[in-house]
Image (cartoon, rainbow, N blue to C red; front, side, top):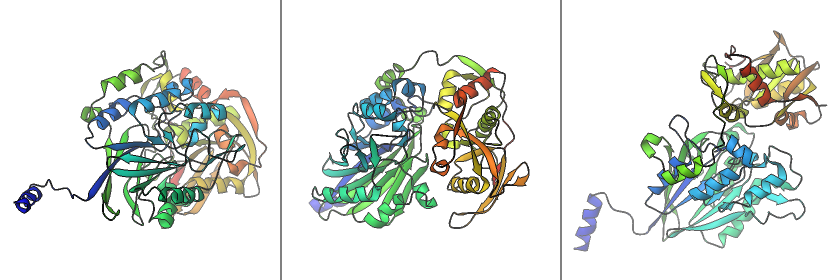
Amino acid sequence: MMKKLVALIIALGFFIPLCAKTVVLYHTSDAHGFFYPQKGVGGYAALSAVLKKEPLPYLLLDSGDFANGTIETKQTKGRAAVELMNSVGYDAATIGNHEFDFKDVGFSSLLKKAKFAVLAANLREKNTDKIPTWAKAYQVFQVGSAKVAVVGLANRTPTQPTKQYYFTKPLSALATALEQIENEHPDVVVVLAHDSLADYRNGTLPYVGEIATKYGKQVHVVLGGHAHKIFQNEFINGVLFAESGCYLKNVTKIVIETDDKTGKIISAKSSLIPLQIATTGEDKEMAQKANALKVPGMEEVIGQAGADLSQRPIRKGEQDSPLDDWISDIGRQYAQTQIFIHNTGGTRITVEKGDVTRRTLIDLFPFEDKIFKMEITGRELKKFIRAGLTPWNKYVYAGLDISYTVNKKGRVKDLQVLLDGKPLENKATYTVATNSFIARNKSFKSADKQQVGTKSVRQLIEESFQKGPVFPPTTGRIIQK
């Protein structure tokens, strides 16, 4: 009779192996304070609605960069973000580079407010050489009948210089944590990192993929961020890699089946869930909490966009966007230099044709970066340009025209850089201006940098909108052939 019953269950498609454990993980990254939906997509209320429909026990994890990016996070120095993450029920998060936006004092005071585990195996206090008391290298969670160990690896390039903290090598920190975790016999081991598989493929941050090549028998899932990319069901040496994009537009769901008898992973699969409110709905209680944190006066109109200013490139082969080109142009005009450099990651949204509000400005560029100028050689500048072109273009330039190809290994070839129609000369010196974030780049460490005036990049943007309707410049300054 029992055999017939089991056969019937299998035939009906309801059979679940009696010796299996199911682990469910949810993952976000690079929320940057986008608490509210944009055009019917995203926000903590939508995320909460998805989570409330999950029938199985789960962990909610975040790969960092939650502390800053909108007026609500800026004015509260990240506190609003942590409050909402506490309310949604995050279990753990690691530390992104933008958690340092409010410098050392703001960094520590913010993370002490977290009710979720702050995981950063490679973070150390300079005065103790230990992980801060408010953080951990890892934590083991009981998720239903399964034990899940989560190790955090913080990003090592803080947006503001730190005097109180330093970072150890991530793979060394991971190896130490894995040795300790082994004694607790977890069913699943997850690495939560604020670095990206995209950078691993480019060779700029190779440790991400090396987690799988070196620790594939100990680590089962790697959840990354920082690059604002989406990866699903990427496998290296049997390890599942997933990344969830940015601005709370999506959440990744990972389902892992383990064999209870052998401890081996039977299957692991990730799926991206777009936070389309028409589909997910919104948790009313979470929406009320988020709306209570809204800063008043942000809907004041301060100017007009005469046409869409796209944050993304608009033509095939072009690596520069209208919005980024426009910001670099007004920076160059202010600094009166031959060249201006702007980072594409600094611009967060597309500015659509029509009214531009104060909230638009903060969402567009939430930082207080000032302008700095310096003199550098053509050789140094070309080295910087080459490094920033792959795996995606990280910078745009006012004053330069750039073309290049990429070989099968993802390396830049045939780089041509023109200033006023003439190739840069390796030994010649050029005047370059940029924002304070880029000025701190190690490529410019030896350059003599001088601040230009007192205005921030965002003040220049606001003044430009106030002068009259803004139209996008001609693009095509950076071409991948």
